Length: 304
Image (cartoon, rainbow, N blue to C red; front, side, top):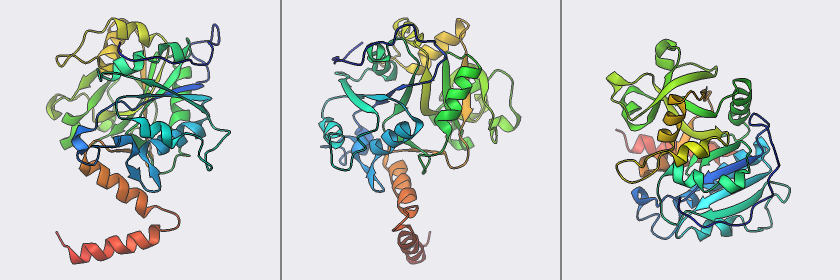
């Protein structure tokens, strides 16, 4: 595990593994190389989407869910994230407390999660990717649905999933439902458990069209599986590999499909970033109608 630590809230004692989720972790240590030169001097998590940066939307989602605190795992050249949340006049002073820890060398998502072990303190915790917004409206209930499924199924991990088009299956981690779902899982809204997770399969080999979608709830057992997970070929520790080890040893992973309005908006590349920005700009309560008129005019001027 790489990274520097800081002081966190005290452990809560023998907290049940399947209890209300009070802690959360935002992973924000990635270098954003696919967004250069926009990310040459600023983190990709600080790129504006609508009226605030990406990570601001993620923080709002966690705050509305009701977590008590957030640990942001950052990396080199990420100071702007701390500055953004540092006691501004319009900050919600009653919101979750925010702590920071650095992943000194990017070694994969599982390595970043492992850094949060002291912070988790034996409790279940949410992990959210800091470059991904789930839904235009943060009041959507995806995290609440995940928490209910996590507790009801007594799972070790709960994962948000989203149906993707056939030509996008090979770009994502795809879940294999324990009981096959109709229509490759498209249209499924109820939680289900899985037998496997398949990283970027070709469409003809994919067990479903449901992709892992940037939100997780982990029980503290995940840290032991991360310690026993070998690095991938690129030397990184991947959370998918740790969850697959957990499944092979009899653990339970449940999935919660995103509903309409809860779709994933990430800023991992320029195509997705443009799509996210346009979507949020068009949905702005004050300026949305004007933006929609502008887009409509531009479409007439620039036909395909």
